[in-house]
Length: 78
Image 1 (cartoon, rainbow, N blue to C red):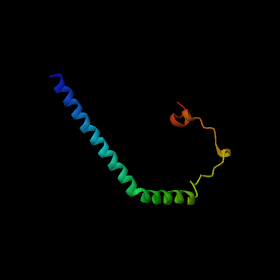
Image 2: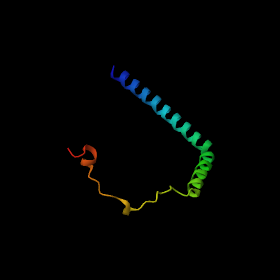
Image 3: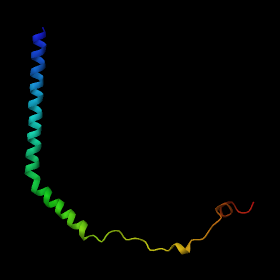
Image 4: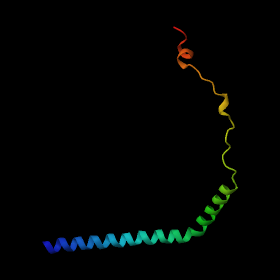
């Protein structure tokens, strides 16, 4: 009985290892197949980011701020 369980375990693990190897090979082949495409896309993205002027910052000055009594503005003089 114990030998049967060990044999079953070893067979299942061997199948899992083979499956993992197949997945790894698939990922590697996909990476190799699309490496140039991904590289050119990344270059175009980097170039567009370099050409971008950046965000437009609003121009304001801190001199125009007024002190406001929020309580009286909201509720009036009660």
